[in-house]
Length: 591
Picture 1 (cartoon, helix red, strand yellow):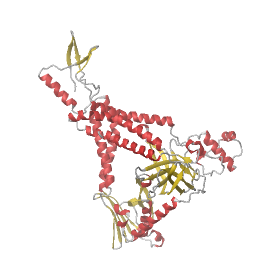
Picture 2 (cartoon, one colour; picture 1 turned 180 degrees about the horizontal axis):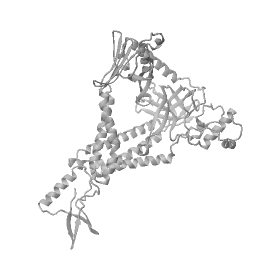
Picture 3 (cartoon, helix red, strand yellow; picture 1 turned 60 degrees about the horizontal axis):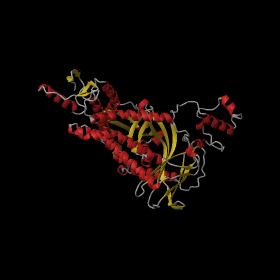
């Protein structure tokens, strides 16, 4: 709302135009509508309006000097996002710049490379001559040379790996969670102060602002849970055996938990190799982790006593396959890490600990721990494959996890696999929430500030990522419930039809002998840690080097393997060489 007014102070007359405290235009709440009605009524009835001015500078005046707490809260939240991003980038800068692929190795890396060359007899001269010769490889620390020389111990450069006793980051994580939770709630507190006032003004959009304090509540709840967990269990050291863990060898050790021994408690352990990397650019940079390999099992638990009291002693051992990357010593930029995760539902408070451990290509297999979790994992996978194979061969698809997304029938020697609409209920709901949330955020940001103002231009630019994500989420929300897939195998023919509702999108028809193999591909995962479920799809690879999706939404590698074997049997891929050649059958889509 804008207005012009004149007022007299002593013998001097002044002209004013400032109506409210904010110096930018906005459209937040019903304030402008009410103020406009108030001023028009005063103008119509020729009534005076109360003006506030600065006695030291009478030309500085205003009609409404009250604080608009709702607008203040929104502005604080808006700019706090940029402050948090700036602080995050600053912290990342203090920790060290991201590692650039192909950069010159550090002096410590080159020294390790020279020692390896000395041990293998590849280079006999001194370290200075090695530097002058420039023979060191850029990826010296990634070498496959085993650490047979006891002096080659790069893991000792990490201060947390000086000995075989490794501590988790539970205490630091607890403090960080408390700091973040308190900061978040401090930033969001103006929303609670302004809630009553904005609600009285009829600004029901303020309910959306309550989402921020709600997130703050869950952050505080998480911080309190971590505090209780730390108070209950305290320090739990991992004693590695062997130290360090070995690629193409063993990763094992012991964990001592103070307190009463719980005989019925199962302690789940997961060993995982992860790739940590930065995604995005500029202010949108964030760190993500991809699991390269993982294995889970239940640790052997036994009661124990020591000078510090009674407790539980956990022992475990994993067999690590070859061709996995080693632990990164510096752990900055993009790097690989090995993590041991401990989870247990202990009465009173759940136990959660994560350990970042050194795992290198030492090849050590001399662990004194007999409890082999890798054997547990292999036996479990074999049981799942065997039971799934028996169920699939009997046509009892409802006895497997495939029943969640697949309808199967076999009539007249023709096997039909139908993936119906609305099978992605949870994913559709999730994308719908994304679409509604980001769409509402986009509209709110754009409509809150007048586009004629400079602040409005910033708001429009700020809303652009929300608009893009909202549009993508809307497209996914429309596609997921309506997409369906039908696959038929029989009479020497494979037919695949993908539809959106009843409209065909892609069609394939080919002879089964044109399928050379079936390939299982990972499409994503849900959950974390030991509860993570990896999802797969199966593709028919043809002689024309084309891949046709014939199965999707398969939960777990074991079930994917069993279903792959079943489809290979139906397609007769194993006996393809004995088939009689038939008609030419291109795999181009049939419109």
